[in-house]
Figure 1 (cartoon, rainbow over the protein chains, first blue to last red):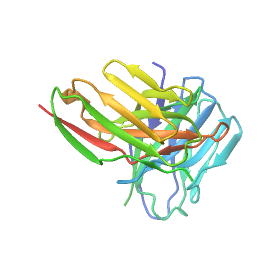
Figure 2: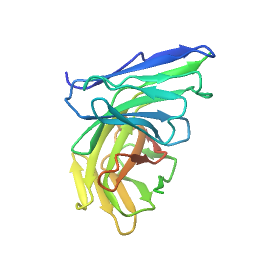
Figure 3: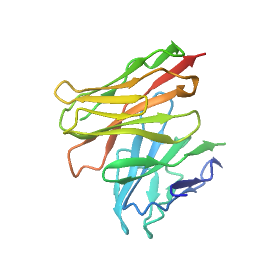
Length: 110
Length: 113
């Protein structure tokens, strides 16, 4: 089936650790995005990439990093510099300006 | 700066009723508007995409309208069913070349059997 796969579904991070969230798509979409969702707030853009080996900061990029070495993959690393990382993270891709989302990863700091 | 508002934050209606969800945006210079559905703990499912040149889009029991000049969109759901219970989000893409989607905070819809 074509789609966007995020893994893991649940992730727990200790203070001071870096963790990486996976996002893979087999839709052959060029553009990919990472959003963060917090209760009572709209989705906020962390990073996006329109082509391989290129990416741009979104509104809340501090404490996060990404790479885009392959068209199919856009992993997000939550670094220890992100002071409030507990949230629901959503990966998306777009074709003809229509956005499609993965099932999300819930990250919790323990 | 584009801002998107969805009111009310929550809505409960009896099964079978028709209902309307609202989305308003502050900057009318949009490229498109998209409606999504989100079930608890899940990702977003695209429902309808309206380009800025369009007035409405329909898919099954869903109809979305767009009035750019007034900064408003509505999602009409006909003959509501318990399976329609979810959070509905709208998002706008502002200006061609700007890749950002600006989201509202959503309306949590409950259909009462």
